[in-house]
Length: 306
Image 1 (cartoon, one colour):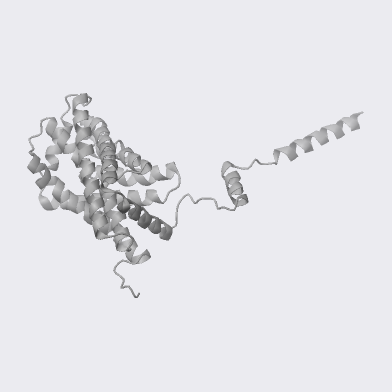
Image 2 (cartoon, one colour):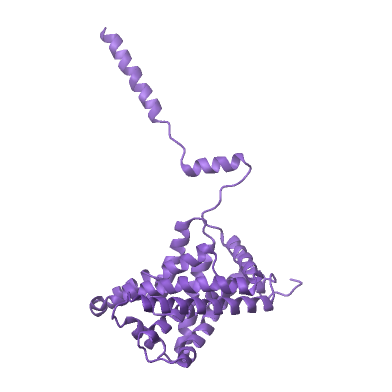
C-alpha cells in the first residue's frame, strides 16, 4: 500500500513539472509566427539609420505633393496642437514662482516636460503639417530629387500660414477661457522673447529646430506609440528647458501674451522674434539635422554622374 502511494505521488509530481515547463508564446512571438506563415516579416520597432533616412525622404516627397489647401488646413491643426502644448507649459511650468526662485533648474524642466512634447506627438500621430519639421523632411526630398523647389516653397508657405492661423485661434480661445487666472507668466514670456537681440533670436531658432527635427526624425523611425513618445519627449523637453525658440510655439505664446497685457506691437512680434527665429529654424532643420544624413546616406551635393 505504501509503495503504491509513493508511486502515485511520484507520477503526479513529474506530471506537474512537465506541465509547468511548457511556456506560452508571447504576443510578439505569436505575431511574428503569424507573419512568417503569411509570408511577411515582423516589423522592426526601430528602423536602421539608412532606412530611416529613406523614410524621411519619402515622407518629405509626400508632404510636398499635397495641395496648398490641404497643407494649409493640416497646418492649422498642427498650429493648434503646438499651441495646446505651449498652453499647458504656461499653465503648469509658468505657475511655479516658488520653485523658480528656490530651484530654477527644476522649474525649467517642469516647464519643458509638461506641454510641448504632447503637442508634437499629436501632430506626428495624426499626420499634421508642421513648418519646422517640414524644413527637414521636404528639404531632404528636394535634395534627393524627389520633389521640386516650387513644391518645397508651396509646402513651407502653406504650412507656415496654417500654423500661424491655428495658433492665433487657440491663443484667443485660451485667453477667453480664463484658465490662466491672473498669473503674469504669459505676458512675461512674450515680453522676454521680443526683447532678444536679432542674432540671439536667430541662434536660438537654430538650436531649437535642431532638437525638434531630431525628435521628428527619430519618431518617424519608430513603429510603436511608446517609441514615438520616447523619441519626442527628450529633445522637446530639452529645447523648452534650455529656453530656445520655436517659431510655431511663439505664434501662440506671443499673441497670448499680447492679449494678456504685454506691451508688444504686431510689427515687433515679427521683426524682433518671428522673422529671426523662423530663419534660424530653417537652418536648424535643413542644415544641422538633414544635411549630415543626406551627405552620408543620400546624394546631397553629388554630381549626377557620381
